Amino acid sequence: MDEFPTLIIADDIDTVLDDAAVVSLFTFDIPNTASKVLLTSRRDIPGISSIKISGFTVPEAEIFIHSRISTYQLDPKPFTSEVIRTIREACDGSPLYIDDLMRLSRVVEPKKAAQAWADKRGDEARKYALKCEWDDLSMDAKSVLIAAVVSDQPASFAELQSVLAFSEDRLLSALTQLQTLFLLPNASIVEGEQRYHINQNTKRLIMNVESSSDLFLRIRVKSKALAGTLPVVGRDIISQLIRQAILFTSGGNLSKGEDLLVRAIEKYPNAADLYGFLGYLYRGVNRVTDARIQFEQAAKLKSRSEDTYSHWIKMEIGAREYNNAVRAATLGISQIPTSLKLIHLRLKAKYRVAEDHLTRLQSEEAERLWREIVEEIEKVLRAPHPAKPEESEINASLIKRLVICLEHLGDMGELNKRFAQWCNWHKDDPSIPRQREVFARRRGSLFKG
Image 1 (spheres, one colour):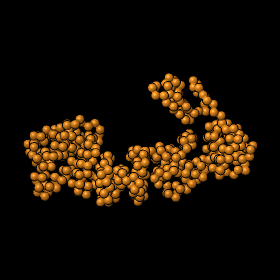
Image 2 (image 1 turned 30 degrees about the horizontal axis):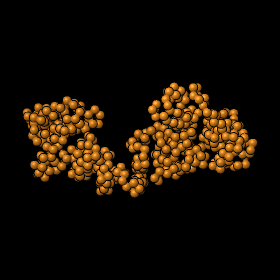
Image 3 (image 1 turned 90 degrees about the vertical axis):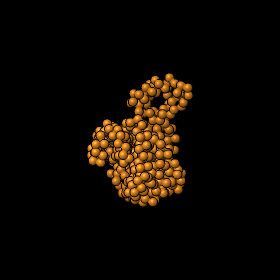
Image 4 (image 1 turned 45 degrees about the horizontal axis):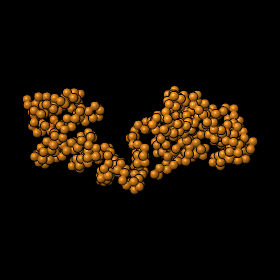
């Protein structure tokens, strides 16, 4: 920071000034650098030079108030010159406060609203204004506003519907009420999907006023629960589209999720992840041929999504198309060479191919595949023992497949060695006792497990 002077703008620092670390940053740390920081606050902060920015003058306030009258569709008659001056004085000319007061004028007569604001002043007046508006809302509208506030990012129509379990008509009715009162802006459209970018000042105010209410707490829990069921897909446009498709399909609206993805692919034909998720969607309703086409296209575009390949492989195994599964896994590993999951699925599919050869009395081909599987698993086992629980499970499964292949090949020395390793590494694996019994029955004293 010392070498590269930077201008930083910290907006509305009042929301965090009680944090000692933040105060220390602005009063001690930053002044010792070459950087300049501009922060906005309605408080004086000791040790920081300030520039006083006055509120609106009377003519400026008049222009602004008339613009709000038009925006909020208010009756202009009560807003006489005297009332406008009263509003300006009550709000100290602050555009933020004037805007809130003007919205309050939808439910309280303007002169009374200005007087109430003058009596309470500042943030307390804003809380009072919000409570007056809040009391005028239906329970559905309150629920929708809270759901929009607790979302980590601008909430979509589908997310609000999923969190609240509202029908489309019910949600639209609540949104209309909120937009009529200007508590929630009209949705911006992201690739045909509505998203509600709630004003940050309004968001903080609602959280300040309502965060302890039972309704707020219930909806926040539902919102976080929903977020926990969704994959982490990032924040770019492709990720947002996939997230919306997930919400539609998980809510039972398969056709809407499919339509969203098909239209997105038309616009972004090189986005591999869109094809991969559409394949996953088709797999879920057993449209294997359609799913295969989408997975193939994702692979052609060199998708690096492990999930795309794993869903494709599992679909092919479920359809008993084991050679297709091996090919899908090989394509995935070519893009993600370190994926233990894809390596495991490839070996699983390869083992099924060997079983097919054996049933067709093609024992030499089966033995060739068993040897390949042994070589590939031994290569994996030479790597450091995995620490992650899910990788440990895969490791146990690989050793199990290894000893089974070694038994098929009659390599008892290596089988005994690897079986002991399996018992040592995964002593709680429930497969061990059963496999020990099978080997003892088939190999007698040659098996030392």
